[in-house]
Image 1 (cartoon, rainbow, N blue to C red):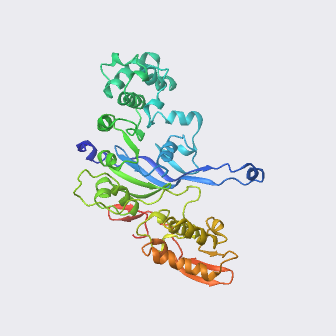
Image 2 (image 1 turned 30 degrees about the horizontal axis):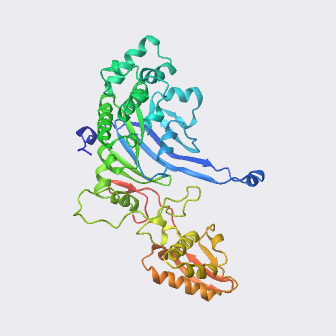
Image 3 (image 1 turned 180 degrees about the vertical axis):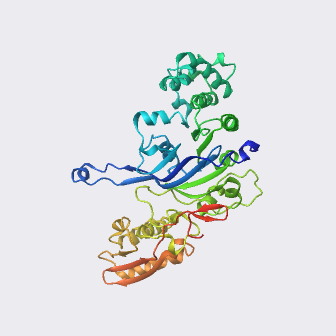
Amino acid sequence: MPTKPDTALSSPRQTEAVLDIRQLSVHFDLGGNLLGRLFGRGGGRVRAVDGVNLSLQRGEVVGLVGESGSGKSSLGRALLGLAPISEGSIWFRGQDLATLSGRRLRELRRHVQMVFQDPSAALNPAMTVEQAVTDPLRIHGVPAGERRPRVVEALERVGLSPVELFLSKYPSDLSGGQKQRVVIARAIIMDPAVLIADEPISMLDMSVRAKILTLMLDLKDQLDLTYVYITHDLASAKFFCNRIAIMYLGRIVEIGDTNEIFENPRHPYTRALLAAIPDPDPSRPKTADLLRGEIPDASRPPSGCSFHPRCPVAFDRCGWEPRDLVATLEGHWLRTSPSTYDLERSRIANLDDISADGGSETVLRPSTDASPTDLVALLSEVRREDQGARFWEGVDEISEEPEGVRVRFHSGEDPVLRRNGDVEVACLLY
């Protein structure tokens, strides 16, 4: 990736907020099974976006960065009314987009446009380039006599010239980079104020990615655009963005100036994402801060800090719970022989039930051929085997009782974004 141009390094021209997102949530209902629906019990809710606050200044490029499943695309689609808004507001030019629908929302979409990830899927294969780029003008009632000059101007702006060579072509006649230029031309033809770019280069060849980002930066200056850049790629975000918001499980966990995020990351998740960026210098030492495990189920987010099951520096107040005990036992059994697993697993009668438990304590019940003392011995062995496991930081007490072994956890806290230096971070370390 080439050096970031000076245009991307410059601050927004004004301090005027173009978009003001307040406590925005996007939740999707899970259908559940037929029996549950008959008795009025759904299958839970996926918290794709969970209480996000974000203000975009005019001329700014804000990156939303995180793994797949972190809520980036759901947030971007909610800004266009393409995903259901459960709570919160999106203020744009004195109007709350979350309250609009139908014709009024369609009128506002001329000011907020989207560049999708896959240009091949975003273009109708039966439409020529001219028809595809003209379509927004037709939908919004621009007189027919004004359409072609505007299409020609838009295509020239995105570098598809001479325009006459492209107007009659179909998407199948174009390369991936050319298709994405057509998509960008279609997005800018109504003179929007905000462009939401959802992974706009991830489907393109490496040779054209920087060219597309440079084009978008040029368009930002020429058309006074504000960008929301959605990506899992921190390297391209560093090249493209003024500010970066790190998202995890539907929430922003760290947000700040791009240079500050890269030079002094606070949140352990941010540090892990940065550590995953490939380093072309083999002589540099490899970091041990790489992410472990997978992003949790958004329909049952972890208690306390949602990142704590994967965090290398989690401690007692991070929100440990019974399912973390199950995960710790399962990790232990992955390192043992099948015969040891069969023996130890058979001693616990209610392990499957514990994984669904909430709260700050649980009871391991022994099977008929085991005793509470056997379970205490098992937990002691697991703890000795992996003394560096962060899980044990959250265990307050293990007590043997007649019905089994009670495991109590320290009270957890749900961190909120707080100012720390030049960034905001949601972590109990700060």
